[in-house]
Structures are given as structure tokens and as C-alpha cells.
Image (tube, rainbow, N blue to C red):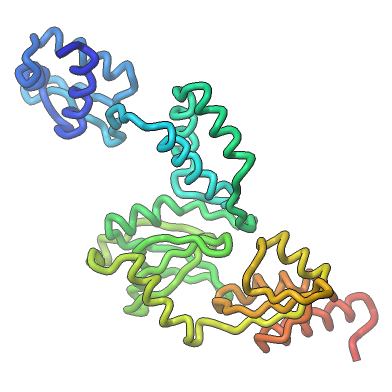
Length: 322
């Protein structure tokens, strides 16, 4: 076995063992302890987080940030990775965003020149448009890790009813309409509730006071599938909006071409779709911003909210609505 092959296999063995001695690895690979010590030193210089412990029970320990062994990719597989990342570019927040960027930069650096040219062309030729929100979601990584590890979290959560403190156990995170959501078991309500990640004000682990629940057989996919049945329930509202030609163009710039918009010969349109109740405030403000280019017909809560805002604006400008 040449040295390159030995280093690759050593990297894989270290990842599996996590803790070992030089003698153990030397015996396994059939080399002297001195040679094994040099090999481990090379892995450390390449960036593998090895920690040396001295004493009778000493040896090497791999820190939590483990390194993956080299993986061979075809050109199409390399392009596919950048294609997947491109689909997320318009989200204002992503879990492991810094690590994703760092990994892609490393990956891109070692690609052949002609493959780099294809990837650069891909960036300019395909896009998955998602309306960018201004709300930050700084706890996505913690929410995702808690859902994987089944860890209860104590959160301070801001909603329309005020700021409350509760203990929840997330079952996953998902993105919709530019927002990140995390369905969770709520210990106070003794049931599942849907939360928005950008509304978290603080977060900490809470497994000491509240032992974790086991949801290994109830995944995020199960929750989303069950949500199709909930869509007909009170959490869903019918949205019906008449749009002028200018309103259609503005809506499509913000949301892309939408099959929910029925277009007429004069360029105007009628938007008819289902809307989650949690998005009522956002879309109310959005359609109010379109002025006379959008006329909301349903839901009634949105119609009444927009009317109230118009009255307040007319009163503020000295021309109260009669």
C-alpha cells in the first residue's frame, strides 16, 4: 500500500475510532509506530482535528468536528451540487449557511477549469425565485439539531398575542413563502403546534426539566402529509384578489408566475388560492401596498383590516373617510 492510499484509509479509520493510540494504528496498518506518528502528524497538518492526550491512558482523540475522507465526484455530480445550492440562494437565512459556503468554495477550488466554466454558466441561467424577507432566523441550526437529537428547547416566542416563554421539541424545519417554520410538540399545550423561526427571541436547551419525547417514527414528512388534511380546516383561508394589469405584473415580480392567477385578455387577473392563517398579516400589508391595483374580496378579515388602515391613513392626512 502506497502512502497516499494509507493516509486515505487512515483518515477513514480515525473517523470511525474517535479515540486510539499510535501503537493500535501502527499494528492495524502494518507500519512502525514512528511511521504512524508521521502519518498522524500529516493528517493534523491537513486540517484533521486530532487532540493528543498524555499519560498511561493517553493517545489520540478526534474532536467533534470530524473530517470526511476524499470522495470522487463525476462532473455531473459536481454540477448537481451547485444546482442544489442555487435553489436556496434567495433565502435570507439558511441552516449552516457559513459552512455551506465554505464547503462549496473548497469544492469549487479543486474542480477542472472546464467544469468551473459550466458551473459559472449555471449560476446565470437558472434560478429558483423566492421572495426575500427582511426577518432574520438566527436559530435554524439549533432547531434542526434539536429535531435530530430529540432535544426539548425553552424559547421566548413573539406572536401577535405578545411574547411568551414555552418549552417545545421540534420535529424538523421547512421553508414556505420565504419563511422558515418548525412544527413542534409543545409541552404546555400537550400537542403539536406550528411556529415561525424568525419569531424566536431566545433559545436554550431544556431537557433537564422536560425529558424528551420520542418522535423517531413521526417525521417532518408525516407532519406535512397530515397537513394536507388540515388545509381544509380553520388554519386555511380562501384568498381571492382582483388585480389590474399593473397589479398582475407587480404580483408576478414578487411571487413569480402563479397558476393561481387567472389571466384575462386585457392583462388583468384574478388570484384565487388557499392561504395559511399565519400569513394573514403579511399578505394584508402586501396587497395594501399595491393600492388600487389590487382589490381583496376574501378573506373578510383581510378586507376589514385594509379598510381600517385606509381610514387611519385618511384621518392622518386630514381627510377622514365618510
